[in-house]
Image 1 (cartoon, helix red, strand yellow):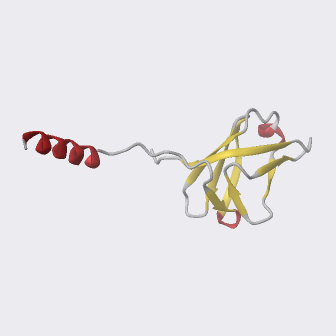
Image 2 (cartoon, one colour; image 1 turned 90 degrees about the horizontal axis):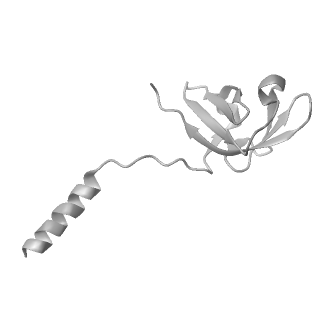
Image 3 (cartoon, rainbow, N blue to C red; image 1 turned 180 degrees about the vertical axis):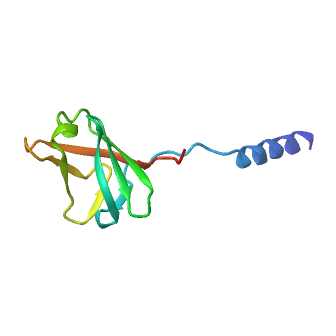
Length: 107
């Protein structure tokens, strides 16, 4: 009986402990909800929604020139989704893919 109580106590404590948030690689944002977007560096972009929340997009490797050229988002269905959204660089025409997007925690 004592072992059962100990096991139940451990399970209860484990259930109450906070868990780390895991980024959803297939999260999506509506393109029309974006106020602005831009390159942070050759591997990340920043998406700012109209409600003020900021999201970070992780690119599929380096997207050389993105911070210099700028980019447009190719979204036929009106959504920017991790793993699916394509970025077209404005001058070179190169294409880069957003692998995941996640909200940036407020400081």
